[in-house]
Image (cartoon, rainbow, N blue to C red; front, side, top):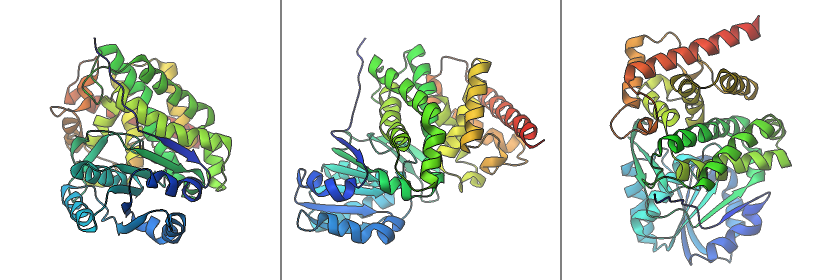
Length: 368
């Protein structure tokens, strides 16, 4: 059996990394950079980026149009061509970064990623999630290679609202469970081949790190302070989860997330929040040990992740409506088929209802 792992070219993390390292890292890759920034980054950090890069590389800044869709990728690609960019840089959240990755791939240029949130595991991966202009999941896209540089400034992460960090924890929480099921089934990772033991070891380390340091990291982020615990969780959310999912594989949790995106009520909730509920449903679907289920529910409650349908905008949803999400999660080519269990829309619907019922039960006890 041939196994395959894929990694970014370089990973840089630490407080003030943008000021201290960004210019040096970009100058290794080229002379002219198109920098795609999300609107908040442009407003809050635009001047800091100019200072960090002044005299080190020529650059042009563009502001992201809020959705990683084919139309936005085409727009940014045309802008990069007109500028003569030889490096594409993405700064911001997951969709901004994915758009930069897709642009760099389409133009066959080096890609540098500067996440300003630890809210998803997108930064290190060659995976791009394409949505429609309306925000519905459309398809996965694999670019030919991972980003050449991923640079994470921990102080910027600490300065962001804590909900972003918690959402990233929700995304990362799925990593070990999905990779483990792929390992059991010998299902393909994002390369189509099985992952090596290092990928599954990193996925488990991701899970253990979240449980050990997650609450402490959230407390530090609430104070906008960088501590060792916060550094550990930033690395888990970004690097360990990215390597774990891409080289270990995805399964039910992310497929259920994708299914949930067909319900407009969920669009105001973030990727990791919906993945967290998808993980709880996955635990029910795959008959996990009750002790594991208890651990994950307790952690989600403690860290502030959704454990009920109401908490992702689906209070009072009917089975008819929820079945739409269940069916979409089982579409041909979805990662739910990496599960070593029987998968049907009816089973997924039952798992989501069971996950919601358990979440409601625990919430009622906590509020009693």
